[in-house]
Image (cartoon, rainbow, N blue to C red; front, side, top):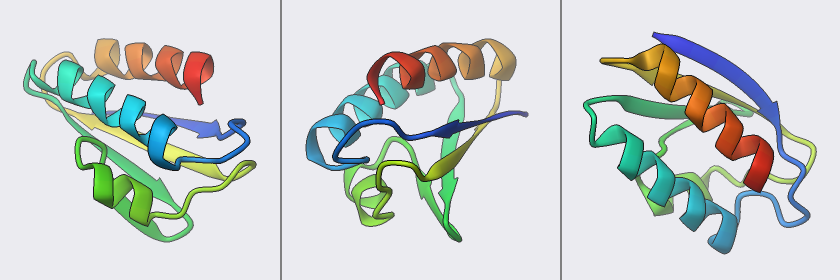
Length: 88
């Protein structure tokens, strides 16, 4: 299991477009057998489920903890952290 935290910098938070990008990325890397979970403000969601991610209500400035479980968790967490920095 691997974890990292990230403070959302996107102006709209994890709403439609950025959440869609995140889910697409999570499904791509999750196909390798990893489960990616987001935790923020007492809520948790599977990163591959769009409505669950949007339902968290993550806004700009909020810290999200990302947990990766499964094969190659460290490598996938590093890839996801790079994605967060570049897109969210």
